[in-house]
Image 1 (cartoon, rainbow, N blue to C red):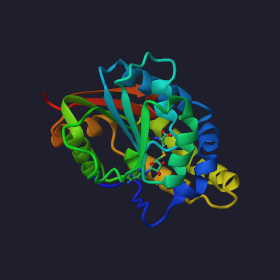
Image 2 (image 1 turned 90 degrees about the vertical axis):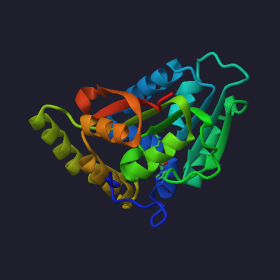
Image 3 (image 1 turned 45 degrees about the vertical axis):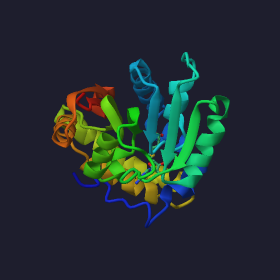
Amino acid sequence: MKNAAEFETKEDDVFGRIASRYDLLCDLFSFGIHRIWKRRVSFLISKEPWVKLIDVASGTGDVVFRILNGNDLSPDHQVLASDISPKMLDIAKEKLLPFQDYVDFQILDAHSMPTIESYSVDVYSMSLGLKICNREKVMSEAFRVLKPGGRLVTLEASNIPVRWLHWLYLSYMSFCMPIIGWLATNGDSSAYKYLLHGVKGFPSAEELKNEMESIGFDEVYFERLSLGIVSIHIARKPA
Ligand SMILES: C[S@@+](CC[C@H](N)C(=O)[O-])C[C@H]1O[C@@H](n2cnc3c(N)ncnc32)[C@H](O)[C@@H]1O
């Protein structure tokens, strides 16, 4: 369960460098389709009976915004938005200003979150972050902080089950991602080198399900979005 992107933020703060352009770049790369993925994962999270939610690798806070926006919130609802990059989290703070009564922010490395108590959260979510982390460490940490019966929800790159289509998609990504990344970042396309590497090296939806089960999660199920370009996994920490 290695880090599919072979990425280490402590060695290269790529997300800090592209933070101000990150949302725009997501739209460019996915033709806006990432909005559909994030809407779906937020909807599934909203359906869970959570009071305490931790969103890890929150980036600019897109998913947290969608979870909170338009949903009935009670004063008990508490969200912790976290990321290893202070610059990404600064943008999340601005975006989530209307929900300041419900959200706290913390700089956290997903691999080890000593400030978060064990058995303390109802839902742990991570969107588009797992491919740039060591999955075993991150999912073990998610398992630790979740309450029994709590859910892990991930949105991540996946595999299109039709092999030639998957190959076509990867070819498109290999060709376009470095060019758009280079143009949009004035020549600093390193983030997209990592992300592309992570997409290529990431396990299939079925393999990720098996990895979650090997950590100890049960009731793991997944759904593919956009033919399987990404998938959402939901797993339960046994009660
Ligand atoms: C591709 S972005 C995804 C952001 C956001 N979740 C979204 O869906 O738009 C990946 C994020 O993971 C963060 N990140 C990278 N390594 C991390 C780590 N070890 N712990 C926590 N966050 C990390 C980056 O700073 C970046 O904000």
